[in-house]
Length: 156
Image (cartoon, rainbow, N blue to C red):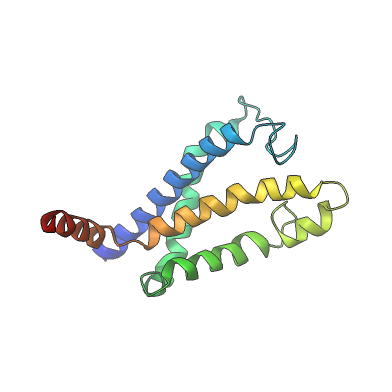
């Protein structure tokens, strides 16, 4: 139970950390008029209540990931766990969702006549990067990682 609780909190922390980091980086680098086109990142309404609740909402989103990941924790910590988790998230959570949003196949069908392909690609890259970082953070057994690092330092 204690191990599952730690894992659950780790997933929440990993999601909030990678989401916040990637949001700051990509909003800075992919501003309007960037490489991917003028509409790549829409201008945010900073008075929006949802934006004010973003941190709390991302914690809830991380908790939902944590609940689901508890079912597949053994797979996550297996060989190629990062790749397995990443493929799972990308297929089920991004490209294959039934909601017609830019990154999904349904969204591609709906928006392709009206949205330029560079905008769709520009919206997808940050999502793919954030999810890859998230999967890496979740799949690393941090205790083992720090033990290996300390052993390397001792051998030097």
